Image 1 (spheres, rainbow over the protein chains, first blue to last red):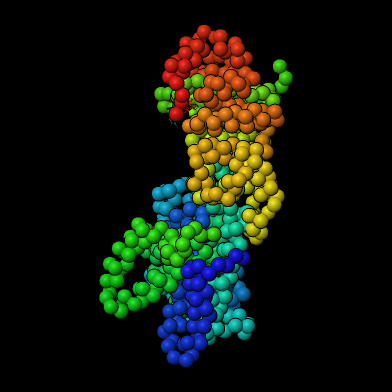
Image 2 (image 1 turned 90 degrees about the vertical axis):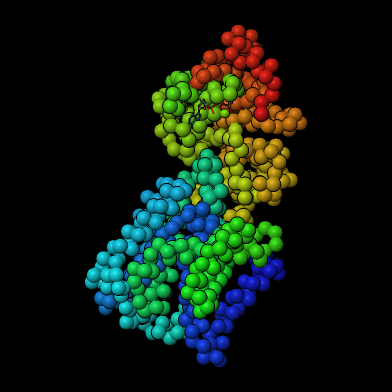
Length: 315
Length: 255
Ligand SMILES: Nc1ncnc2c1ncn2[C@@H]1O[C@H](COP(=O)(O)OP(=O)(O)OP(=O)(O)O)[C@@H](O)[C@H]1O
Ligand SMILES: [Mg+2]
């Protein structure tokens, strides 16, 4: 790996160090709120990172990505509700269900492009939303409380806030590493080539659809896992977590942080959630400030935060 | 005549009221450089689109190596050895030159469900890509981001991309469009070399280049092939002169 000390690398190192050391700070100050906030940030960063794989690298503008948060979350919630609390059962089911949903949605949506793709992914996500809201047995509109977090046979205790925090962080680091390998692999080149010029990709001999679909499924599965973490974090799932505005939030994190940049979604998640937290203390109309800010990013800083931190081209 | 590598029979394509291909029949034997000329809007690019699989014909058959490929998807035709270049440059602008060509190599090196190894460190992709770049004279530009290349270099890269798929036949759509005289001369030289080992269907408005390179020439007007013959016969053909050559001599170069 070729690490030079430009601003972005410094920022990455500082951010990762802060994330690793945060529980120490919490232990010293007793500021439990920070732990809760940053657990949430890390989980949503993982979700945003999965979206970045298809949106940033693959050019697939999915407006239904929060559906996977909900699907992963509900898989945990429903199983827990019915007495199955073992993580060794729950989590493979989370993976299977979110992968399957992504496969079905992707195989239909990826036949379209542009606005149609956006609208179709949105439509599928809203469908999932209404299905879940209609599950009267599992709380319907009101959602479902999870009384017991996923059990891992005593290997790790998810109810311990610090252990859970580090589990989420491990997922984030794992996700970052996997994304890095993926992006630079042959598969990653195909996904990016297809974003850049799908017509040429086909002309030189790639059946691009199947690779895009695989990317879509990988991203959906990763986000499903983030959903399982989120459900364990909040100990509650509700249809609201997969409402389309949540998908927009994820998209905002990606765009704010820097599309097609490995660490962009992490920067974006931190920026958005800290910003949201700070401003919501001052005014309940914080979104009115966020809107124009995003506009500025889109207009003047295409690469988002990651782009601002780099002088010259990223690599 | 020997068995044709590419055989087109009665190919027809309508766009609304426009007949872009009007029952085109054409056979290109292996090793031939076959030039396709005709005025703007004659339907040359539409023909290439149907050969490469992007455009579905209304009627007619396309055979490649004796095999009916009329219904094959684009990537399968590429796998069989048919490679096209684009009249309007179509590249991966945000990739480097070498990455562009390496992708074309990768497309023909098994499936790409490979998630782990760094593709940029695979010599079996990079070396053939460098070789293709060397053939078109872009070897020293490998690490430049494509968006920063000149127009002429884009045209050279177009050819390198097609070459890197190790094709049996090249379909070149106006490779010299918009090139200056020096660049054109270079391209004629490159095509002259490629002609030794590949079958080529060449669309080109530059008559000097066409008559220098072509073994045979077909002339298209309004979707129809009005003549298909050796260069000197084409030059002497009255109908062709009237429909096309005379007109172009006064019209000058093509943008
Ligand atoms: N996708 C399309 N939809 C509608 N009409 C089209 C389409 N593509 C081509 N045409 C029409 O078909 C005819 C043939 O176009 P084509 O691009 O094949 O010509 P050409 O011989 O390549 O011309 P040029 O020398 O300008 O490149 C033209 O009248 C064109 O307007
Ligand atoms: Mg044309």
